Length: 176
Image (cartoon, rainbow, N blue to C red):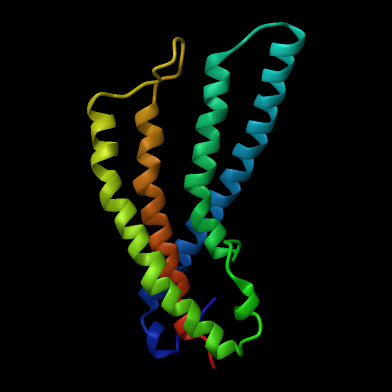
């Protein structure tokens, strides 16, 4: 991934840590792919149950909703790693590589990292409270485990921060 003889990555432990972050993001991306497939199957079952058998299933609908939230929360670091986030490319694509890199470094330091830190710290009390009451769905017959879903918010922020750090090191390590 990155050259270990560069001053930014002279430490082999740091390189292993960055590789581990990449691996975690990749595995979570694969998990998200499986969850998307399950969402598709679940949605098809909901449609068949509702429109052909005239049966509703709140637990199944909530399971699809939980999967959807999980995909978003767990897939954000993978999407960053793969360069899939939206960017304003009209100006960016016309710039030389060195300028693009420094714009990306500035964006990561000024926007991505502070955003991830803010979401992490501000979501901890929210998740902690949800755990303290073992929050469940308020819908009749709904699923338990809302507290698990809410835990994904600070987890998402941490994953985004660490993948942003990984991308930042990668950008700083690029040869001009």
